[in-house]
Image 1 (spheres, rainbow, N blue to C red):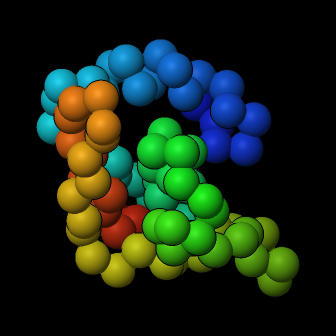
Image 2 (cartoon, rainbow, N blue to C red; image 1 turned 180 degrees about the vertical axis):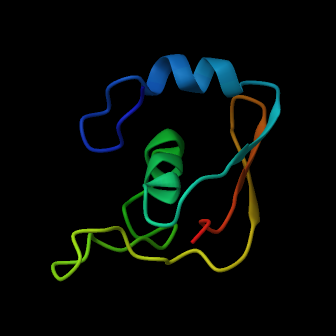
Length: 84
């Protein structure tokens, strides 16, 4: 388990992704882009993200197209739009 908010589990995840091509896929609004921001050491708005909706309590669909990101330590991750 990894968390972009607490930073827990980021190091083992980074090690697992090193020198591989991976994809972050999952439901819309669960934090795929936020996790990638944390792994790459980017500010929260480098890869566009949204807060959880105050109305529904669910994450908001933000990523609209798949994009490939390169890790400086080797490896690539595709950030994909969420499944609705």
